[in-house]
Length: 329
View 1: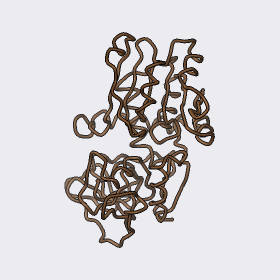
View 2: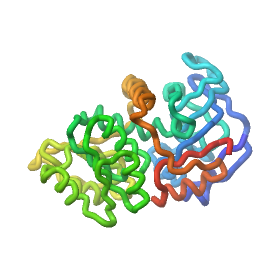
View 3: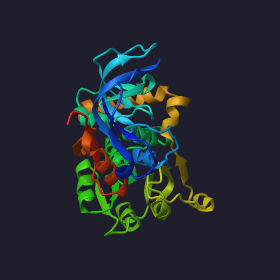
């Protein structure tokens, strides 16, 4: 089978090599799938660079999030059959940027019938991260104002749709006209192009000076710092990641005097520390997808040959929406 392999660490365009490798045999508690579509995530870029918290031994195949068809079951696997269409997270060593991948059965879910392969492929990491942030680490309430940074990105776009599904007023922050149009198509009530506007002033204007009740921040850096200037009384700032490259150092005295909370989320820990809510989350996302309330917008559907360039553009911040690589193309 063909698989993109990282044989040395570096930029995706420089280090990814398309190789013919032996067909995978799933170990106990794992399944092998024929990849139907694999999603690009910023974590895959970091894996290539060796900057992600998980560091698989070289060589490895990235592509953490996918939709596939089960072709083999490891010992001890129950609840799934060969031929089942599933979504979930692959192992760090044998990911989805290949014709076949291996997945721990604990991270495998039935693929929603209401979504096509590309849409289903992106429903796990980004949407579950956003759901856990908005409905477990805090409780976003109908009528509240949600400020979403990187609203046209993978996890930000999920937060926009889930915020709207919860009945919140959603303000999306993006960089560029194309991303602004995408965020509006997702359903954001107000879209701020940070290159043209100051989101702090927009938030204050929209809320009558009260500020955002919840801030969803996968960027860090200045996005976090400026968010503290427009956070509401009893507001919550959700720390999702640091795609901007700078980890902020919060002023805890400021959180005290303005009476807001700073809340971290590491979604992956739920798979090892408390997996029951992960299943609950998948069931709820499937329900919302079947109702048509949540439907991932795929910015680009690319072939397997396009993985290095697609990942590189994602890392450079020049993509709009989610990228899905179709293994059969």
